[in-house]
Image 1 (cartoon, helix red, strand yellow):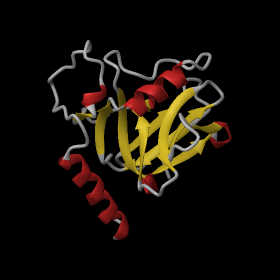
Image 2 (cartoon, helix red, strand yellow):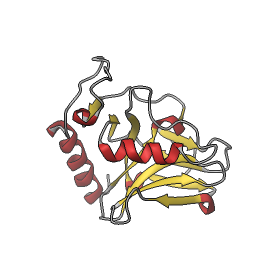
Image 3 (cartoon, rainbow, N blue to C red):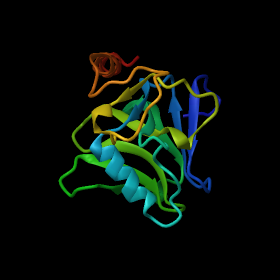
Image 4 (spheres, rainbow, N blue to C red):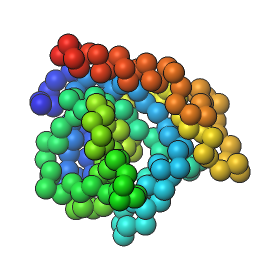
Length: 171
């Protein structure tokens, strides 16, 4: 993938040794509050020099991309999967050169990856929704600037389905 392509997003680790490139618009831009995202963020933040993963309100912001639209252009040797449980199908991928959270991918064949928004550079799309807010601590108040959903809204599931169909037709 070339960084000269239109609609290209670059994500990099804190020290710059790992660079990801995503081509095209993301499927969605979300903040997730599920138990697993909160725990995964806490575990990553506990690694020395990892930096902040969670937003101040406890959510974790992602740009959701089709798996076929994201690639590592430099530093793939530094990428390491972390699981919050041995049986989890979700991998939180960090750059071991500086312990930066980079993205989530899945062992169970999901067709998308969630790139940590804090790693992304450039003109990013606005946040579209907050998901799984039923898991946020009661003491946390979240902004109503974008729609919030207690679980996975039908709209989000339709976005994922549309992306899968587009992949089948190589669009």
